[in-house]
Image (cartoon, rainbow, N blue to C red; front, top):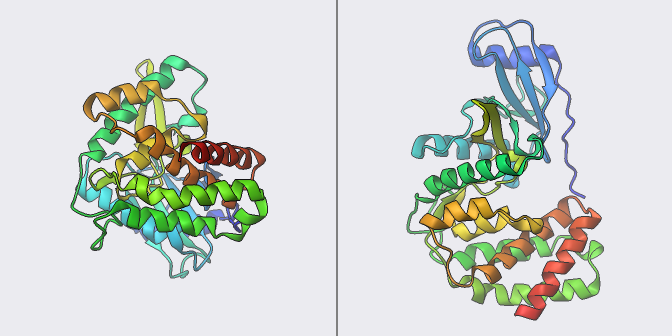
Length: 311
């Protein structure tokens, strides 16, 4: 399993130093509370006695790199703030120098509310929130450019040239071979050999959030209903928008209210139902690698078996 540090500690004195470095003034009455939802880095809420009264701090061990590096997250948030109207937190302070803390840290705006997964079971409320989510993503997906890839850089003209190496890379993780049976691995490998052909039918390079799940959707109850206040933790890039849609439906999730609103403006392309399973396979493999839960292993086997019969 990946060595994740989601329980790094932060004293009130350390929090005070961070806040004073940002605000340029002293703060008092500091409270440090863990926030639910952090799966890779430590995420804490800071409360204090001057505006804006709350902030979120993310902590990572020194030298953390790859897609979970806090510097990359800060850059993506700044890009979204500068180029779109997508609701996401402002970056207050980013530091990897370790002059203030023994960790890399990212200080962010605290969006009001709780995450989607904390909304009480209520099909009507869930459907309303999914409709709002569809409108938000439609706005984000209206941003396109000529190439696929990271927010900055030349990019690639063929989506498969970017996505397929990711699929192959996670397949090569030693934990995948340890946790999946030989039969499932053979079915996974078969699907990977066919993935390039499937993804050749590509949409335009589209700006996506890249990690839309319940823990990253912040919602607030007001005026008699629930409202999305923003999305956090973006893995933003220019991709085929189908990857975003498939991620929303992964692990057996059904989102009819979302799809009804979304497809009214952006109809699904023919063949999406098969292509989405390639994205599901990628998501499954990542979860098997990072977390290794039996449910993820079983679901990976189901997706791989379905792909084997379809391809």
